[in-house]
Amino acid sequence: MMKILIPTDFSDNAWNALVFAMALFAKEKCEFLLFHVNPIVYTGAENSVIVPHHILKETVIKESQAKLKILIDKIEKEYTNKNHSFQSRTVYDFFVDAIKFQLTESEADLIVMGTKGATGLKKVTIGSNTGHVITKIKCPLLAVPEDAKFDGLKQIMFPTDYHTGIDIKVLDHLKKVMELHDSSLNIVHMVSKDDEQLSKEQHRNKEFLTDYFSNSNYGFQRVTGTRLEEAIQNFAESKEMDMIVMVAKNLNFIQRILFRPLVEQISYHIHTPFLVLHE
Image 1 (cartoon, helix red, strand yellow):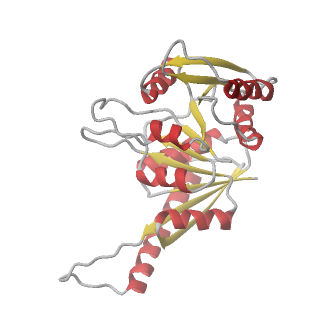
Image 2 (spheres, rainbow, N blue to C red):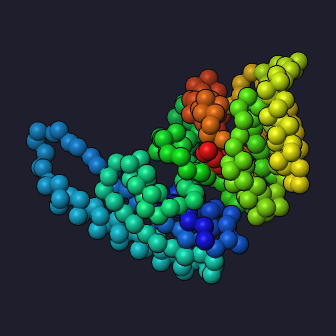
Image 3 (cartoon, one colour):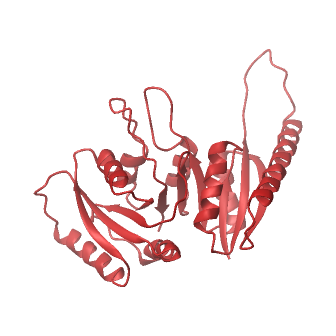
């Protein structure tokens, strides 16, 4: 049985991520753990009424437990899938520490989190909590944008620069997702110049992918662009990709795509679900 950790703050964004995950794994036996973290907050206000720590903790935990019960009641009322079961848990802790501990306790196979675009003149693709989980926790994570709706998984985009080798276990995760929906894989080489040539190392890594996916529906693509972020976004949207998959081994590559705010390019925002795999 697959175990999926769903951190939730009870927002529409978090609900959308849960609905997407249930649809994505509709045919799989899954246990979903709905997990709410009440963040530890310290106040130094001199004139404020100081609530004892244990009372504050008990209060927020009870409130969160009540909200989680309402959430599970809503799921059971609106969605009936015998393959899926649901558990809930809430803690009073720092967010990343709580996620790490819960992963150990639950032995979850995947984290699914909703992402919400920033407002105003700056836009970034990933919220701070999701960004911290991707970079600090070694567990596959599916980031679901707030406006993403599941409509099958026909096309998957796998951007790469071929500079780093990929562990077979990581590719096994990707192949499993492909097999669930008979998906086509688009292995996309991102280059800054049209005449850029592959090094010997890059050739070896490309050949490895060719061998691994030889029995799968896949193809190689090449995209040129001085802005990696825009090139990926344009390809994903123009080719109607249903998901983007990347390996966290190349964090610099991921950070350029996910975490870089573009003040001068305020329209930039990836709307495609993004699966990050860890070795």
